[in-house]
Length: 419
Ligand SMILES: C[S@@+](CC[C@H](N)C(=O)[O-])C[C@H]1O[C@@H](n2cnc3c(N)ncnc32)[C@H](O)[C@@H]1O
Image (tube, rainbow, N blue to C red):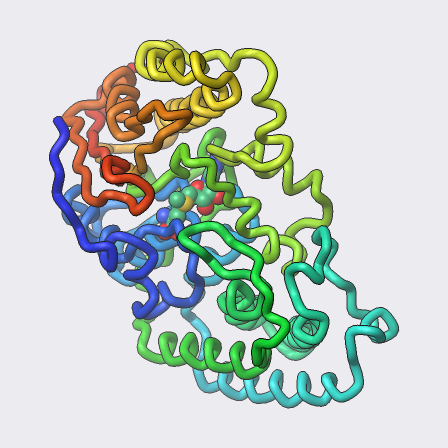
């Protein structure tokens, strides 16, 4: 059953988080909104006695919202930088007064360093340029110098890991786009010329850090601290302490957006990776990965359905795409193989009276409409879920019939369907 229930962009997307405490610490443009999470919690009748899982947690909107509401929650995230963002955004037991004093100290020491260090003598002072391809495409030499100084001061002066993470997160929150040669466009990063811009690393960082400290001062301590795991939703290598009762999540959409490409400046600047090979492998392991070898490996051969549910539900639309283009057919099939593998992995998690809400986006590949919402609903049905319903809540800018939707379903506790 499909119905259209429009929701304002300001509520549904990352824009909802820009003014909300804690949610505004890091902006991930494909994030869903804090308001949408609250709406989904209500739709699934979740309260503080339930445990929620977000297996594609991104910047942890679900976990932050649950922690604010006192609802126990777990998260999975495969991207090490985004996992760290989420984890750090959930650390609220820091003292705002100590943080304000530390911020002053960081600013003073950074200013002192700025008088001694310049781009040409970075190595002499022990600074390492991030090993990203063509770093000066990403950052102006003077900006990169100030960024490296500030990062080093954070490591030198913070006294605990939580404090270090807090200030690294404050820097991550303004690294892109404010302090890089990029703009966010609709979703993707685009390079722009910033040679004439007035870019002041320290004041930009300080303003953001002060907002974060103000949020902490207002934030009640977490009564039910969320737990966030750096693991794949396709093969979660974790033991969950409690059974889950609800899943609220938004997996990637089959729209060729690469989370790895778009977090590359962060991944390299904050030392989460050193080589292009690591980035390529991460994109291969990420659902819908589409950059570099994640795409070239799909060029040859024919990807096969991972299970009978995918064969039944997804193969017909993939066959239509294949008439136009083998690569895009393989891309679509490996995307749905990933989703199905994840859904089968959920069957092995401890769960009780499980209700789920998956936020997905429809797409068009080589002119063929890919109704992700209906296909996911079909996968739920094939896996034995009940009460399946699709609620379309937004038309995306890129196409009038490209909906974003919530797919709801529930699983009876005695379900033994494993296909
Ligand atoms: C649409 S985003 C989620 C955004 C999130 N709802 C938020 O508000 O920030 C999808 C996320 O799924 C993650 N992801 C993709 N493949 C994954 C996998 N196999 N296991 C875990 N996470 C994965 C991506 O890295 C990305 O952060």
